[in-house]
Image (cartoon, rainbow, N blue to C red; front, side, top):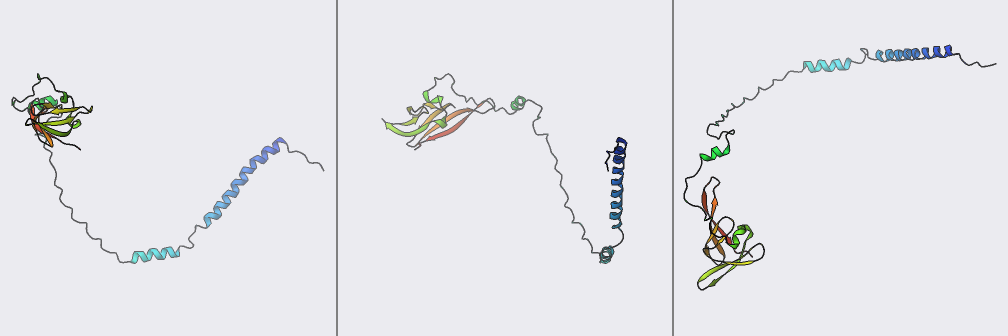
Length: 190
């Protein structure tokens, strides 16, 4: 008995029928699955729905009364116009010239090149009835200062020296084109 190889036409015919057979099996399985979705087994669900519907309905409490909202009115009439250059706004707030200003022609002293925050008072000495403060500059140099001398970058003039502190009168810009006087102290540091 000899076994013959299928012809090309037979091969094509078998390929066409194979997918059709698969579709038939799939359709049959779907029908069997849908058959389980019938009316059977829903009696307990219907009974539960009926019991819920027969329950006495409770009253829902009314919503709480809302507090009346008080609105805020923004009054910008007293504020500076944000589109006006700041210089024009400053013109209106200039202080009258009090005549107070630093002596810019005076020759600068050694301690005026440092800010007061960088200077340290380490003590004081008294000689011939005059008290002198001992100040160390940031570069480590020890300076002897007394009343009338200047120190700090804000035109600070020493007005009093005690055992534990130096009192200064500074003349600083007020930011509006004028000058104001400010009192500052430098105390002994350990």
